[in-house]
Image 1 (cartoon, rainbow, N blue to C red):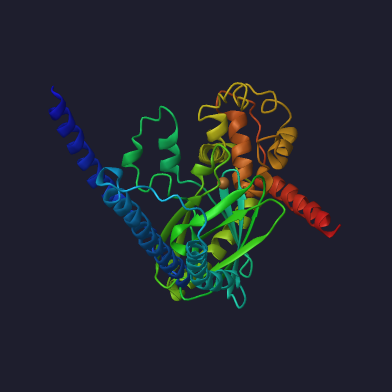
Image 2: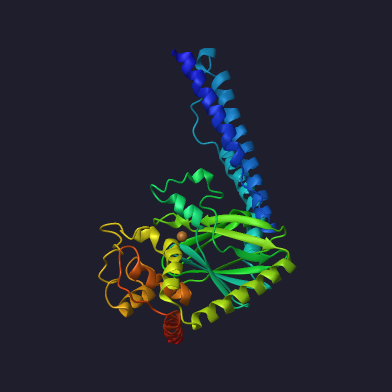
Length: 387
Ligand SMILES: [Cu+2]
């Protein structure tokens, strides 16, 4: 192939590439769906056009001078140093531009910070690697993790083409739901490492820092599903804790709220009954896949040197109470699952790993026992807060 043909082939590939890319992405910042996000967009456009005008003016003068005053046309370079007029001009003009830009920016920043008169408060806690949502006034509380399909497709050798998974890595099991036309205050904190809660359509993102509470607010005017992700860069799995925010009409939100309350009640009742071992094992398999498999691997083999194997593990094959205690409180990189899983889920996965993944201890633990331990754990944490 000669050089021209190669070049043409390359150009056509680039053209195909850009048209595909443009189907999914836009070049500019998104406008979003809130007043704040629109203000942010407008400021971004003002700054962009000021930059364009300054760029055109500066480079215009430069190229004009270089071309028309070049040496071959008989020009000679001026040799002057320091010129007060020029220096004043290039100080005053940028100062005016900065002040003009700072006024709307400061107004927007103050507006973004004003969480007063919120009608609903949602506490967001970042965990490795999921989000926890607490509707403080409603008593609703749940975890939101990467959806199962994405989670399977992301595993090495899963055999699943991620391109066939809808909203790959941008989908969750339990989305956070809010009513539209309502001022919502978000409180942010983290249980382990720093995370960053980011839904681009809202126009801001907020770090979630262990031991600190950050806050922000939003009011969405258009019902819809808005997707985002943890925007914290350091750490291995922040890319696998997406955010799905569903804004609903107020009436639909009320229905969702009642459903959540009913689900919470059902979960509580489920913990009180006696669960047969087989039922626990069957349920535990899913819980394992969603919560444990990313480190301990789907088959329980672990990653030698990093994450211990479940298969043949002395902890899993030893005293069940010691295993439960370790799962409850976490250890090293393993998070404390005591506050993360519901009693039935906890008992199911604890029983599953003792009787599956190559282990066959034969015993089980009841959700009611776990529930008792979890409530004791909560009491201890409250005491800590009082000190
Ligand atoms: Cu994160």
